[in-house]
Image (cartoon, rainbow, N blue to C red; front, side):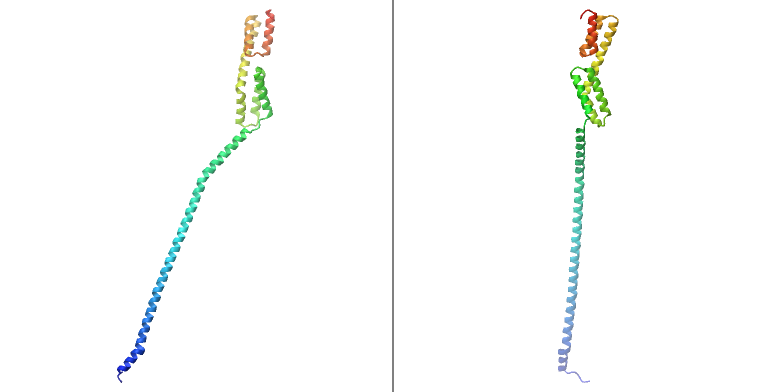
Length: 217
């Protein structure tokens, strides 16, 4: 074989080897560039995904806190609402009791009994208070209303009963003494009866009769 001359070697190097080497270097550079670009893009995507995940978690956490806060606020408001509702119920109940209609019959009986008591007619006052007491007990009024009505005349009712009981005792004693012709004792008992109950009709009549018998009329 013929040896390749130096000139030909230079020609081959210039037109074949050098371009091939340059091309290989370019390929390597492009490959490396593509590799690093892909890595960078992956990192960017991972960073973006991580940021989005953190944002979502933060949003969920905020939403949970808001819900918890709202629930706590509502829970805190419930006792206040319950207390307000309770007060309104009590106020309504009190208003109902206050405006409870009293039967006219009961009102009239109490009014009449008070009038009898003021005029010293304790017998009529006692019997009328008793009627009022029975009417109140048989009415459809609430227990609280019944108690208030009875308390309104209870003291006078009891006082009238005491007066009648005391006057009746003296009158009975006078009748016994008069039967025994112990006129002075009878007279004292009748005077005692009239002292506590001046309008005691039976005692007045007996007293006038006794004075006639004793010649004091």
